[in-house]
Image (cartoon, rainbow over all chains, first blue to last red; front, top):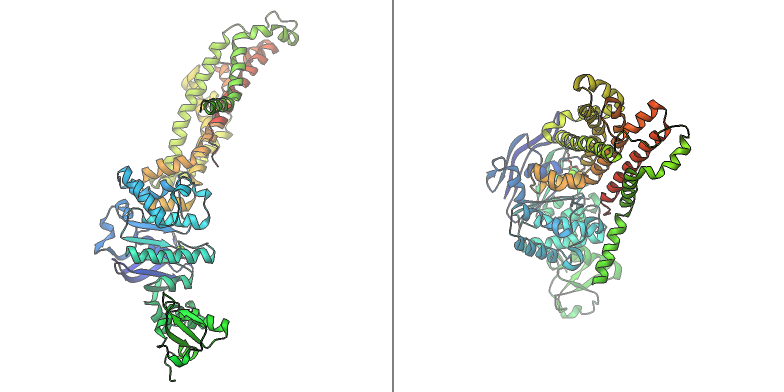
Length: 315
Length: 250
Ligand SMILES: Nc1ncnc2c1ncn2[C@@H]1O[C@H](COP(=O)(O)OP(=O)(O)OP(=O)(O)O)[C@@H](O)[C@H]1O
Ligand SMILES: [Mg+2]
């Protein structure tokens, strides 16, 4: 659990972070968004004390971060950054094993852990263990960066645009992997991104920052439905908000039981797909009605355009 | 298996072939300069003495190496040490001063350093070593600074963020990454000093500069050439050795 209580950071006369309070529960994935220079990275780096905060208090599981020795604190917190910061003179395996080595784990345990992480992140041992960072693609390097952050199995993970500078497909794959990973590992994660779709897809809690302040925080769907002001509204996509909201809701939310008489609908959609995908299928197939199917391809319901659009159907 | 090993050995031999060739040539001339007497006579048909004999070339070579080596080791220790010190958080304030001092050092002619050192340290080997040390310091300090400062900011941030201590970052990240640049600085420093050391002969530190100075004083071109050729060969040997020491990993 991470708690920031009325935290500020000043660089000389400039206030980079201004009196923010934030609580990230254990197992929660908190995403910070906001325009460039609004203090996201600064907030992140105050948590592992790469930057010392000027005012307020930062607690980890109830203990002020200043009571830890800096290195001890950082070895307990995973850290992944956009530029990856992989050591160019070390192999992938050695890079991943960095923090366990700092913690003086036995060699065999480090090896086993590195192997485990490489499998977890889809980096086949035989192919990647002995490569140098310069021999990796952008996506592979980011994976190694995340593996290194996870190496010592930290409770807390700080990620500063870890999937930045990647093509949309690789980025989406990594997002899926992070979600799957999080479902298994239940880390406490603070994640910074510029990509609003990424933020909405990943966040349990979305935090919007503006000029060093937190202007709104909460569940992504709540922020979409009730933005606090025009800034939050435009940041969340303005006119695009309808699609963004639809992307957050599963088909199962709006479908209704299949009626025998409606058997003429041909197009199908999975029940865990998003309403946005359903809308796209309707547009593409010129269909106003979709059959909803479960994992075993069995029809379990149907979704009409009217219902998708209106939430309540008065048929 | 044994074929692979012999192939590996051949490659190793090839690798060291250039410095080895220069070394053989250097030693051959040092020990057997007399063999070229006929050639040198063409340069100095009127002189009675053609080959410099006031001291053994091997002794002069040894003394030359000793001076350059001592100055080099001191310059490496001092230069790398100073550059490391001013790139630590505690020493940052001195960074501009040290890099300026280092660049001034190079504009100062070594003869002037000698002229200033002699009244303080007297004649002989010590002032020469001091002059060479000061002169060789710049490329080492400058390259160490460039090497350390040039490390990617992301790498530095990650190293700190992972919880490495200052000492661990220095030993495991900064020095290994800066090593090629530092080594290049040492190479420049030592190679320049092999040539510069010759002027030490003017203040009574005998080395391979002796035949050159004596040749100039007595108007004997053959002496000058003998000293110059040996110094040139020594510089080539050492420089090609450094070339082979440079890491080649891309
Ligand atoms: N070390 C520093 N010294 C002085 N000012 C700094 C420092 N680090 C950050 N700042 C300033 O603090 C403000 C917030 O910076 P920060 O890096 O937190 O922004 P950000 O939200 O991460 O932006 P971006 O999205 O572009 O990464 C900026 O105005 C920046 O110039
Ligand atoms: Mg940032």
